[in-house]
Structure formats: C-alpha cells, structure tokens
Length: 466
Image (cartoon, rainbow, N blue to C red):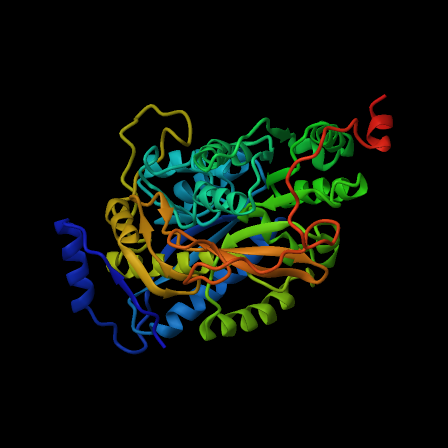
C-alpha cells in the first residue's frame, strides 16, 4: 500500500512548474527510471551507522515497490567515515566533486555536520542528517542543512517536568566534553530553573575516559562529595557504558541515587542487552514515542531478519528511533526527487573561482539544489515509519510530539509513562495520571529524596587518588 504523503506547496513558481511537469509525466511500463544520485555518509563501526544503513536500504526497496510508476529512482553512493570531522568532510567533498550527488544523507554527528553543511551551502546541495541532534547545528546558519530528527533541546522540558513530578530540588548534568554533550546544558538549565530546580554544578567527562577508568573515577568522586543525588546523563553509548559500570562498582547505583538518561542514550539497553540492564538497573530514561502500529511491527520483523543476516550484533533487536528517522528520510527525499525530476545528467555549474588551488575552491553548484531543498522542507509523510514526519522551523528540526518515560529493569526497559506538552508527565499519553511504580537504584519503589549529606567518597575512590 502506498504511504500517504503530500507536499506543502511553497509560493515559488519554479517549484509549481516542476510539480506540474511531474503530474503530467508518465513512465511507460518497462521504461528505465532516471537515476537520482544521493550520497550517504555513515560510521559503520557505530550502532547508529550500522543499524540505519539496513533501514535505508529497505526504505529504497519499499518506496519503489509502493511507487513502481515513478520516473526517478534514488541511487545511494555509500561512503564510510570515522568519528572525525575531517573524515566526514573528505567523504562529502568526494561525493560533491566526483559524483555530483544531488543530496547527501548524513553525516552522523553534530560536529561533523557543521563542516559538511558548509560544503552543502557552497554546492547548493541539501545535507540531510537524521542523527545530528545538537541545537548548535542549525539551518539558520547553514541554509542547505536539514535536520530530520528532534533536537536535543526538545527533551529539556520533558526532563524538567519529570524532575518536578518527583519533587527533587537539585540536579547535576553529567555530560561528555564535546559539542554534542555541552549543547544541551543551557537548554536543560533553563527548563529546570523554570520549575524551580537548582543546578549547583556540572560534571563534564572527557571523551578519553572511555579508555581510561581513572578519569571517570575522578568525576564520580566529585559527585559523591556533593549533596545532590539526581543526575541527568547525556553522552555517547561507549562513554556511558564506562560511566555506569564504574558507578555500579563504586556503589553509586544503589539506594538514594537517581540517574536519568537523555534520548540519545536511552537505547543503550536495547543495543547492549543484559549487560547494560544490569549496570543501569533503576535508571530512568526518555525517548521519542513512536506508536507501535501494525505497519511498524511488520517492518521491525523484516528488519530483524535482514539485519541479523548482515551483522553479527545478535543483541540488537530494535532499529531504534534513529533507524526509523533514517527510513523516513529516504522516503521524504524520494518524494522530492520525483518532483524535481533531476538526474546525474544535470551537471554542476562551474565555480566562479578561476584560480582556485583547492578542491573546495573549484567546487561547483547544483542547479536543482534550491528547488530540491524547498521540496524536501515541504514534504510531509502522514504515516511515516516513525509516525507523522514533518519538518518545522525552516528545516531546523523534525516536529516533536511525545516522549515515553522508561525504567531499567532486569530484563531491559519497561515503560512507566509519557510526557506530552498538554498533559506533562503522566501514565497515559492522552490524560493526566500518576506514573506507574518505578523501581529505583537499589531495588526500592519509594522515590529517593534526591539529596544526602556530603560524604568523603567510598574507600576505593579515596585510595585511587591518594
């Protein structure tokens, strides 16, 4: 069945003419569709890169099976990157200069996206990221950057409401020392202060702590010496696993402690399996709520079969919300590509720089880029795999709706409620009620008070830094 989607028509004559041309065109049965070149930049060694690749491959197959009469067909050009901005920018430059792609999906991180977005602006090629969630990367600064994800700032109000619901008066953000980690902090502090919650200090953990346990111990010692016992964690999967495993070893996953994870981290239990559940037992987490429709259930079943044929990560059983956003991103781009009806036969215009000595200086621009950008921004998938897929704020963010609130138990996550702008924190998504009973660190069901008199730290922590 063809997915419902529509274009919100901007008041631009070129776009209207292209749409009219598409409506009047017809591809005879058996005719070859025009190839629409799209670059994809992923980090294959990461969970998000590994999972989303399978989702995007399936999205291309599903879209053209549902739309066999389309006159264009997305042709992905895959490029691998590591976690550096240089690697992502090099891949993007290759795609723009040598392939002349009409759009790029990726890169994964916000830091990478800042660099690649500049190339997209110069070449007039949309850079579409489903995982660069930092608010500091925005289309207000880079016209051709489009975010098909919720920004990290969107969850600040949900976390503040959760803190308020349990009556905690102080919170300490614990985050990685990176643009991704730090970008949420101002939004989180503002949201907490609006509900009367103080942020007495912050805990910033260097990325190198993933491989150096002593750096994590140093930060945990500082936390154990403060009175605050409510921590909001915002960092990468690998660093978070190190943090929680060390906190468990040092007795900081026990009674009296509260740990809340942001949605970029909440999927760690689904990805790491029982090992993560054991060290995070009692933690709370939030993540975008996606209604488990029959359509989604069928996709998940197909995805598991496909993914486990191609990957050895047997613990992974869910495509995660990032995978669903990647899937819907492909569908949205395919709709826009059909309206543009451009192909690789439409070359980039030459750069006006005649004496450029670098690849960047000689980079041309896409003649279809401006129209394609407008069409992507105005394409809505009414029943996307992740739900309603609609861009707002001039492409800066995917429209957010509700978060689900999860609690780590022995066998993984269990849902204890939701957060919505209308009802706040509630057991049910469509009415205001109390949350389900939460199992806290240490195994109790009575909510921790959120503070303790400062201690000198555990013996092992003290000995480690004598």
